[in-house]
Length: 456
Image 1 (tube, rainbow, N blue to C red):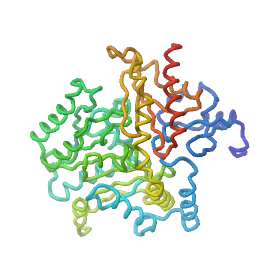
Image 2: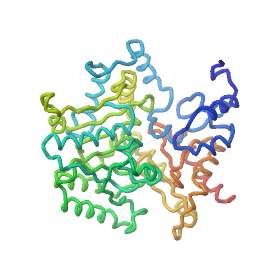
Image 3: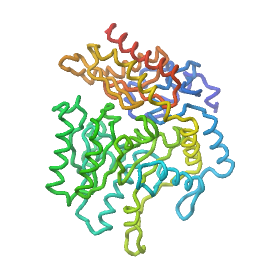
Image 4: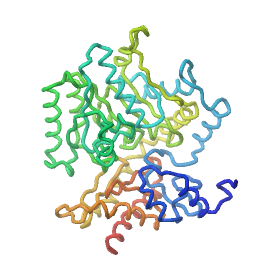
């Protein structure tokens, strides 16, 4: 059989259509579109993806929000190759591994105060699943077995395992799986554009949380939030102070705060972690995506010493955390993560973000007057433009029209790869993206939106 390198784009797409089931993809439509530029990525350089036709595209959504430094980064490539010359993977069940030890130490050093223990997994969803199970078992281990319930935000997204879906507030992702999910208590998203009360929504949400806890805190074990911004919900930004207030409520009512920093961590919001913006230290933190710089699957759930201590007892007491993954603490992935963290500091990446964040704001601002733009939302390097049929109402497009998908398809003509969240056009450039490439990306997105509605 020929290797992919020996096949034509048409042959590759024919095999793809025959064998590959793509995530979050209407497969009938995918197969019907046939082969065209931008569909089969063959290689990458810097912040550009190169397809089998040789066409180059700006990676405008960081390969699903995970790429930090660009592609084919020398320092990370070298770290992976050096580790590969030692060993690719060994289990952490009954053994230890140097790269995983070093990474755990680094994560404890750079995350908010109090997070001292690191449990590895392989995706953001599993990191959340672990946090949920830890929170649940923690209260059982300290003889408070009634605390079994969770509070979550509407329009939240925490992954696609059953537990993480149970705490997700987006109907598209969890509606059909209702019979499989455990019950959770949801409060509205505090984003003013999507909350019925607008700017006053955040205070109402906080009041709702307090009402829930004052009526039955003894039944709740944790509240989970995406700090500062709900990514998959449509880049729904939260008002300043909301996260800090949630932290206070969790502390006041003795429940755990879980922060899902899978999407927001590692420079996405302008800081290493979103929690830093409001000086919040959670009880459990979930990391993934950018942890390895976008190179390899790796996730981590960080816990306080207090939580960890509740699981330390003689085996016969049944307090051990019986959870694990085959590739927990994979040596190659940990080597990539260590190199990526080094690069963040060596390149002074965090210091360069303010200028890029302002560039995004300025570039998107003219769309604020567009009749088909309802809202522009930004948190650091994360930005979303919500498209509407009429911004004065606002009247939303019929989902059947798939306007967001059509706009992102049109962006390919300008050598840009982005993805929609419904009718929200999202831009998640790599934090290390150079100013010139970032400017080309933003200009192309604005021009694509203007052109699409001029022609429709």
